[in-house]
Length: 292
Ligand SMILES: Nc1ncnc2c1ncn2[C@@H]1O[C@H](COP(=O)(O)OP(=O)(O)OP(=O)(O)O)[C@@H](O)[C@H]1O
Ligand SMILES: [Mg+2]
Image 1 (cartoon, rainbow, N blue to C red):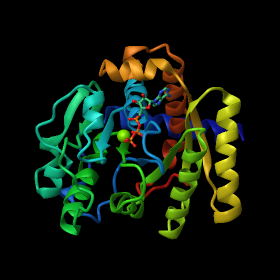
Image 2: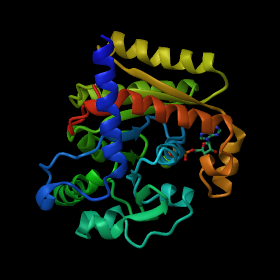
Image 3: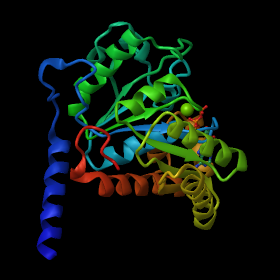
């Protein structure tokens, strides 16, 4: 038992070391849509809008970066530009340009050490990317994914073809809710949509803006229980972030919370979530949405 545990730990640290130092893509040939990504891809989703997805993406990325892990953040809420605003950066090319044929390598910006961003751009909407556009986008993502330990996709709220395509490619959904009944109900509806679309994995749930651990646990339990009972779906409670006035101060300052108020309660929550993901995923990832 002890041997097996230490072997697993060794495998885990070798895998993480590899992820930390790999700077170049590893995909042979630069591939098309059939090339699986070389890093776990998380689709940050919600039923209801405004529950904290973009801030979660940005601060989770920084939490990984603090541990010297490289992260790619993709702003798939294209047209609303939230990720670039939160990073206070101005991209020249965006996700839409990549869908139209620009090389993703040209479009990536690096707003922070270890964090690259494919920006969404402001006012250019891609709610209905066609097959060709999606193929170009996905092959670009898969091609560069080997440079990163993690890929985080900030999705638009609700259900849309981009989320469906991501899930079909094996992205792991993280459903963000708050304790408000509307957010929980809409979160449940999102899980149901995943089920209807044939998703067979185990979505994770993150409770944001909770006043206490008890409130977060209770919120998660409602969703987990409802999904188990009515959808026969196992939902995994990944973590929670505290309601924290420092968060909106950081947005006003256009500085991610982890840098603006690094010791704040919500910052601690983002770091805790990053650790949870790191511990849970580790070396078991096989490039095809293996977080099951
Ligand atoms: N933990 C928190 N504590 C306090 N306020 C928060 C917290 N998380 C988010 N907020 C507030 O909610 C606002 C919306 O957050 P964010 O833009 O990340 O949500 P979103 O889910 O990405 O929204 P959209 O669905 O429109 O893309 C923030 O600007 C902030 O004011
Ligand atoms: Mg957002």
